[in-house]
Length: 308
Image (cartoon, rainbow, N blue to C red; front, side, top):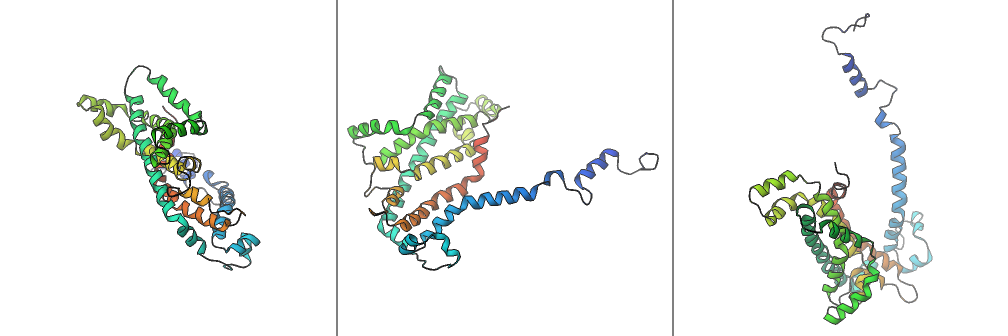
C-alpha cells in the first residue's frame, strides 16, 4: 500500500491484512483464544489432583500390610516408600471367593444391560416414528417413572418373586435392573432418534421397507452413540450395585463382587486393606467399559438435548 492509502497491484487487500493480523499476531501480543491458558491448565491440574487423592490413598492402602494400614496413614509412604508393601491382600481377596463373585457380577451385569437396551430401542423407535393413540401420554408416563425410587418397589418385588419362585435367582436381579433402567433408556434413545434425518426413514418406506427392516438396517446403526451411552450408565449401575444384589441374591454362592467386598470387614472392623484391594479389583471392568465406549458417551447424551 502506498502513502496515499491505495493498494499496490498484487498486494493484500485491507480485509486480507486484517485476517493475517488475526492469524499471526505481532510479537508481544497474545492470541485472544490463548489468554489465560496457563491459568486454566494449572487450575485443571489442581482439581484433577485433588480428585485423585482419595483413589491414590486407596491404591496405596491396598498394597500395605494389615498392621501398617491400621497404625499409620497411607501418606507415610512419602517418607518411607515401598516399606511394608505386599500383594497378599489381592491374593487373599481372590482366594476368599473373589473369583466366583467376579464371575457372578458379569453374569448379573451383562444381561441386565442388554435386556433394557433391547426393549428400550424398540420402544423409542415406536415413540419416534410410529403413530398410535396415546403416544405422547404413554411417553410422559414412562418418563415420569424416573422419579420413582427403586427402594419403594423392593418389598412388593420380594413378595412377587417369592410367589413365582424367582427369589434367589439371577433372573430376579436381571428383571429388577431392567425394569428400573427402562425409563432412562427410553428417554435417552427417543431423544437421540428425534435428531435422525426423517428423509432417510421416508425413503425406506417408499422403497417398501417394513418397520422391522427400518429399525435393524437404519435406526440401530445410526443410534450406536446413544446405545453406547446408556450401556455405560446401565453397566456401571448394575456392576456397582449392592442393595438389589444383596436383597435378591444375598451372600453365598451367587453373591456378586460388591457383596463379597462388603463382607471382607470383620466384626472388629479389621480388614480395611482387603476392602481397598477388592475395590480396585472391581474397578477393572468398569474402567475398560468406559474407556472402550467413551468416544460415544458425550455425543450420545448431547445429540438429543438441543433440537433445531
